[in-house]
Image (cartoon, rainbow, N blue to C red; front, top):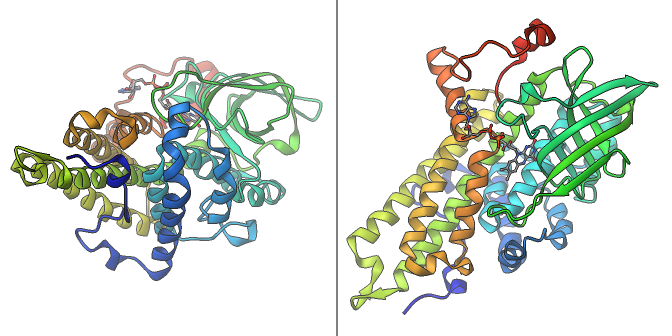
Length: 419
Ligand SMILES: Cc1cc2nc3c(=O)[nH]c(=O)nc-3n(C[C@H](O)[C@H](O)[C@H](O)COP(=O)(O)OP(=O)(O)OC[C@H]3O[C@@H](n4cnc5c(N)ncnc54)[C@H](O)[C@@H]3O)c2cc1C
């Protein structure tokens, strides 16, 4: 007999083999449990259907807005929840176990767009955008990647030319989440002096167009887009005043990368819980497959890695709260948790046998979604190189000198760091 997809997903989704509960404050547990309840009641029943149809679940936005998860660590003065980073991470992991597409929406709205406005914006920009974005009444996106500039954003080609007291933006952006329905797009473009700066483009600007990338096999319920900026005119006040070069962009990516690490933990947890429930009920050779040593070995490998990821995640969150988290450490965190999640999803899929490839059990959905996470917020390779540079002192991103030293100049060379 096999457990049904619904049966395999029943019950609380927490894994606590090493008593991580004892490491959390009451407030952190309250945040986690509230998001957990929302995910079980509202997200899980509908998420697979949206994924299947490649539709974005707009119906969940008001509920997400009430949770406080969007911009969760930003202060109450901007209409946000003011959680600490551990509470935010726990909330992200809960959302990710319910839907890897929805958590990707969150990383763009909260980890990238709101963070960029909060960290780099003017007081007016923050007051205008952050409160409605926290409530999900306004949606943001973050346009950095271009068709020819992925891991190397320092080579981006979108231009911002000063004209009539404002800027005219021209260029293309690729892979930009939420952009087809965004009210505000944070766009990174090169000004005439060669610097990379950030600009706010409103979604109804006639020079801005975003088309959804079709036929994705990962993150199907999140929409990534191709943006075209054609003589897109914006006023001077839409420039992010504190965005001074590529270093500013990368600081936002570092912040978002923190949330993405927790995403890997959440998706891995869901895969493990499904595999464990399935293995206890599925019988072959007259006994539950959970009683076979080889199946236990897989389950033990999963729970061990999840436990280590939980401990790392909480520690990294505490470092971030103490202001002691640097970029290479975040890279190691994202790289570790997401690569582990990728392995755990594959093991869980195996434990479910043929049923593992049925979308109804949702392990296959996580497996596919983790592929997207593996490549965004710095590919696994790029994060490896960031850590490699930190421990060896050698920069191994490129064996070539800068492409255009005359244009790029000294400032650009100093900025030329990978994401
Ligand atoms: C689901 C999804 C959502 C996304 N959302 C956004 C978004 O909202 N906003 C945004 O701006 N971008 C977004 N991205 C883009 C994402 O950040 C890029 O895909 C990522 O930076 C990698 O760039 P690329 O896809 O062009 O791959 P490439 O940079 O072309 O890399 C291809 C391969 O080459 C490897 N590689 C590249 N350089 C090196 C090197 N120096 N050494 C060794 N190996 C190297 C990579 O690791 C990879 O394996 C998203 C991507 C995905 C898949």
